[in-house]
Amino acid sequence: MSAPDLPERPSLLIVEDESHLARGLRLNFELEGFEVQIAGSGREAFAQLARARPFSAIVLDVTLPDLDGFDICRRLREVGDYTPVIMLTARSLTEDRVEGLESGADDYITKPFELEELVARVRSAIRRRSWERQSQARMASVLSFGDARVDFDSHEVTVRGETLHLTKLELDLVRYLAQNSGRVVSREELLQQVWKLRNHPNTRTVDNFVLRLRRHFEPDPELPRHFVSVRGAGYRFILQPEDELPPGAEEAR
Ligand code: CA
Image 1 (cartoon, rainbow, N blue to C red):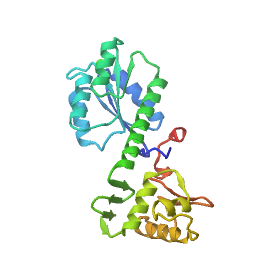
Image 2 (image 1 turned 30 degrees about the horizontal axis):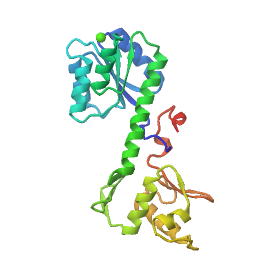
Image 3 (image 1 turned 135 degrees about the vertical axis):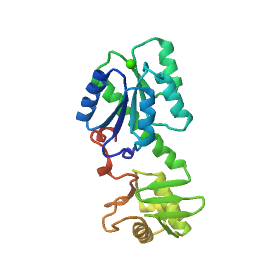
Image 4 (image 1 turned 90 degrees about the vertical axis):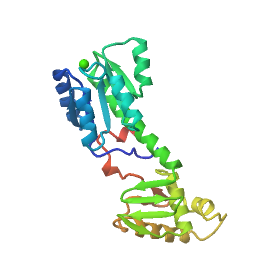
């Protein structure tokens, strides 16, 4: 599994009207390396969601003064917002759990809860979403990494806002490496899968093409962050370099 695609400092929205609980949660998540915002009602939650950059996850209390957590989650999903949601509920009835999950929540936890468990569930929901995004990236016709966007259908490539023209073979190589993101791919495998050459003695071709990709995509081709060499083994495509990962992400790799 490749490195999870997470922000450097995961951001969390806590939607909870009991202010002492909300503050306690904020303190603890901040100690865990999160950047935390609090909303005391459904209305505040939507205001935060509308203006802030996307949150990595939302901890959502079910019983709020205005809307209930199920409705909030349902509305988010209706508008295509798939931020991971962990519901906090005082109710442990099966119907509530089912309603929570059906409203599109990723997970729920019943009050009173162990803080460590909540933190672990939030982390795990963020990781799961990031893996889903990565596996979608494997299928999708558009690949985004760093400052680059590659549309394999239209062959449109932009890097730092500039349009580039890649050959079909270059595009095929990007696609194959990205589909195998995180895995070391040997030169022989690339010759076979991308060039469709079997037992071809000259693997220099591959090296030349990777150099071209680095010149196209890497801010510093001498210090590649995405098209990385693995000595004696081949190449590895890294969708999101490690220094962009949050604390604690290593255990998920
Ligand atoms: Ca409440």
